[in-house]
Image (cartoon, rainbow over all chains, first blue to last red; front, side, top):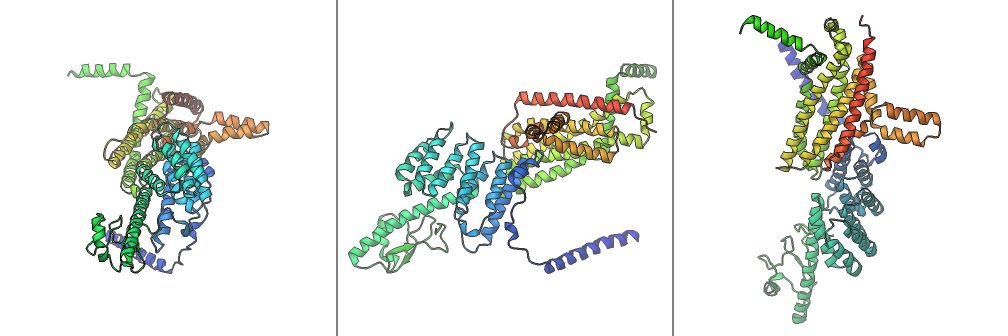
Length: 298
Length: 278
């Protein structure tokens, strides 16, 4: 009898506790949307000092926090954004999080890579500082020079980018393309070919999946630019022959097929993500189908 | 077998096993059995759960850094669990015998106080060794699972595991030292402080150098040399990056630890020998 009573207290009590918790959840004031951006109360040096030998684990924690912080902001954004163009998301805590992770564990490479790809759109000076910090702590890591070169290339400072690739090329174990990239930056920094080379190497070398995905999408975007240049030439030829722009893809289909450009059933050419381009009727222009295409719009 | 022969053999065995080594071994074996009976090794269950969860879920949260996180988490848990065992079991090793009055039965035999302390110490070290080895195997298995095959990190973590074990041996000796003259609560607190300050050794040294006052410089330099330098045994983060400590470094750190342990146990024996249990 006593056992049954006690068991009943446990079961009923637990059920009541669950119901009370659900009720309390409905009464709780909504979470402060700015709380996610509250400044870190421990800087990297202090965190390292108090880590008592657990600095590696704490670095992992700050790294995971960085990913969750960016991920939450992206999820709460209605439009599709690429991780290298997150400036609109107010990521003011990202630099301190990555800085703390790399201070706790200076050999942890992924935060430096993330800082080079994501941070320039938020705070380019912090991105440069953190990547340079990584170079100072890891002088034999040629990849960090590649990351810093990428930041300078994005800022159109081709001279500084060339210098970084040149310095990285001197490090034992650095691949030969680093030296080639140094020359390309000086001669041809703003070209599509250089951009393609950079994203191709980034895709090959990246350790972090999000960075690989970003590089893959940028390569698709570059391919799409090339495709649309070809389509513009074809539109210009068509206009010269007929005196007008095509009203549908059917009118262009014979030319597209002759040039072995992949088309769908309606005759529309396919973009690098195998989605049909949208014809802007009467304008001699093709654009990406923003609802379905896997090619980034920006 | 003839009972007389058996008894004689047993007596002969008893006669040959009367040296300090056998007495210490007997006490050590008993201390290990007590720790097992007290379910100390059940912390391994929690450790296995932790590592299993990490191996399965961490990959998604860490952007593909699961190997590093498993090594960091596994070795950090090894150190943390080991510290708790070294402190909370270590401070109770002597105290429990005094509380239960079983210490009178022990010292009614020809067992020296030093032999008793060393035996207890070695027993707890054996418990920690089992703990650390099982955890090290657990981390290795977790790495095999996430890599779906051989991972070079499996070989590089073991020198770090050895350094962690040596650090735990040091802490156990400190806990035993404090428990030889103090209450368990105070001994635990003091040992914990030594653990924290021991990891701040580098800061103690740089404080001593940077301070203007001679007295303060002497104080911090004294503390730096008096307290065990535990920062030397923290090789968890480099191990997660595939770097193992050099053999020379491990040897020097091990020698330092053994000398320090000998000093601490000698001091503990000195204090314990003068202790009145009434």
